[in-house]
Image (cartoon, rainbow, N blue to C red; front, side, top):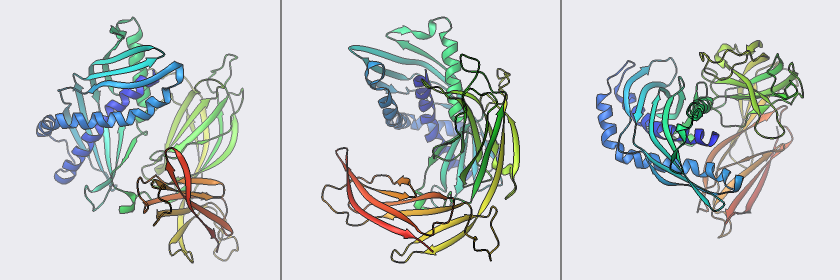
Length: 480
């Protein structure tokens, strides 16, 4: 079921992203904040639909390939591939469009999109010697996304990122033929699949969750620079749901900030406890305290299978005052759709303490390299300037890997860089078929104490036929 939900979500957002970019550019140039008429825009989409159809399908194929690869080998599955993939001849229809005015450096678009298409989507799954065909027919989608273009910059197309989220659960209806038979005609199956898909898509993209799409290379514009640290203390939870057979749960908490692709932080697991006490502290890098949201999810750990989510909550960072600790007691929700009439079951609560500490930035030039390593120190609990402990406390070390020249070896033509610092490892993207790679990627290392006598180690690696090989090595000692 998760497989079908993810596939449907990819199809929907594969359609939405090109439209969001197209709409965003036109309205950024020509419109003012208001509700606008969209007949002319639907005419443009209709004329472009044959080309958009091919482009969207190509994106869907590239996005689903790694997802399909995860299932190959499971349940005796040998291959999963599209036999046919076309969105048909009927384009989506935009029947409403709103441009929202904000005080931020962004443009917020809220289109209302409906699509009753005639897609030709056939997926073939080979299990052992059997060939199973899955066909999606009569698809209808009604969705109200929020498309945010941010930040606005003086470089075409005038915005650096696109953030897409859903204001409410999408309405999705379709038929599903498996081996030539209508799976949806089986009593009860239709409602189960519909509800599951809506829940899965909502968990991925319902606000404050979002799909972040970079448009401009970060090296070409100064965007999303860290501005502070969020100190999170997960204190305790109370009256959690009973998920295990013996009437208990094994809870742990995942926490992350929206707009970040970093792995979520996790607390320890409290076995057989519905009123766990953690008192565990975490630090998260903040890039935009006005728009970012802290998301908390409480899970029941299971030794086998997926972990059940007990509940979730979120806290907008704009509710915090700099350098002031604030305690929150939050009632857990089933998902982010607060107005869900079916979500009436008490799920307990969680207590957290939050402190936002803005950075004080310093730059120190490193002899022998010629670049500047930037150390950003949190202002939280910082001693006076005359104190010998002025560099103590949480901070952030930012390392920018710009590029390399004349990478050695004729066979080393897919170079990437590996950066190691205090046991933490970061890696740039691979640049194919070059001996002069340009990465321009920035990495952050969280600091518990100043890096007065530490070493940053950088290796340039390459891959050839799936085998890694080292092409170069350099270390730099980070000191005062």
